[in-house]
Length: 160
Ligand SMILES: [Zn+2]
Image (tube, rainbow, N blue to C red):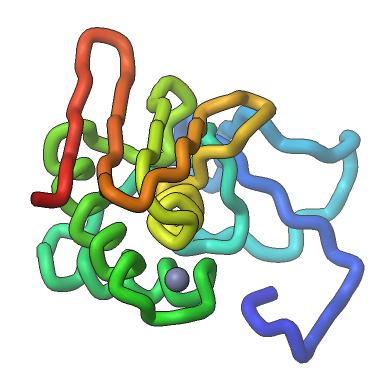
């Protein structure tokens, strides 16, 4: 289902395609009992409706496309095109270059700055406060900074 105007009770599950043998697909991670009919199969990409730190990452090739996707996601999450939303988009573009997938379970984000910057960065990185905890925020009116950390790597981006 791709439209909210056509709700239906069909389950949706993100699985890993392990192999293809003729007309048989070998999967792992299917959340269904034996005999459940499969009605449709689609490839998954980052902007699809399932999101979790475990979803696969497909990075848009073109930088303008990456910026436009982040901007669209930022507006959908933050609901206002304020200056800190645009700053957050610039920060995630830089962070993506150095840290890879920003929705990774082992990537932690600390934001020091305005609530708008924190909200937008949290939405774009999908870093939650719990389960698993990946996000910290410290309100500060004088500083706009994001700190991205994963094992063996740390990136600090500060607005000057
Ligand atoms: Zn705002």
